[in-house]
Image 1: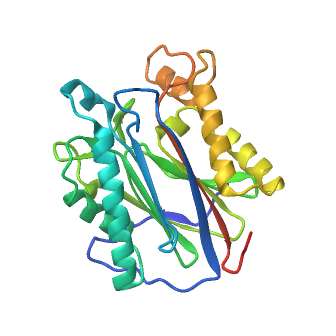
Image 2 (image 1 turned 90 degrees about the vertical axis):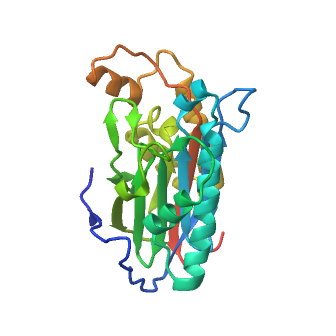
Length: 273
């Protein structure tokens, strides 16, 4: 992976981040494929896009709650809805969105039962700022190569940190700051994407998409569709299979799950399709 100017933030929740104007903007689009389940037609993933606020987010409701009769998808959707609301509010009041701050406020006002991961990303000037809990994540691709891959938080194999009233709070969220350039591409998603598609394949798909000058709407759909193909292939070589083997488990093929993909192009502010 190419080295770049990315770092974990040491800012407290009370500190502010100065945001200098830049000539960059983020152009995002999402595609979602829920697992086939007549009892949960919306699946357990959730996401939001606030383009005026240059902020995006994904969440993955933890399926283990189903054995208690609880649909974590409801929790994830409420959490993302609230996060989007607070992102809009913070931008209006302060001129800047602080990912960990809006996630914390959203969490405190989420009433549904359950738990979920969360990854919140915003563009401020020429920097991406991110707050992440669990195994949802994003990669930053530049010139066809992943230059940053956000670390995930897990307690053990397939056991991510998760936001919930009986689980973790946003205080444990890791924060990241990355400089971006015009032409960069962000691919964010839940584990339904990253358990089935490795970074090399994402590099190739993004590179080909840029060559064909396709929009993020189509590229996000192509990536999600490919992830579904891998998830349904019992013989596919997948990141999840490799991680399972490293943890001492025998597992073969893809991992069927809800799949959320957000693709965001970093472009000059005057860019028009």
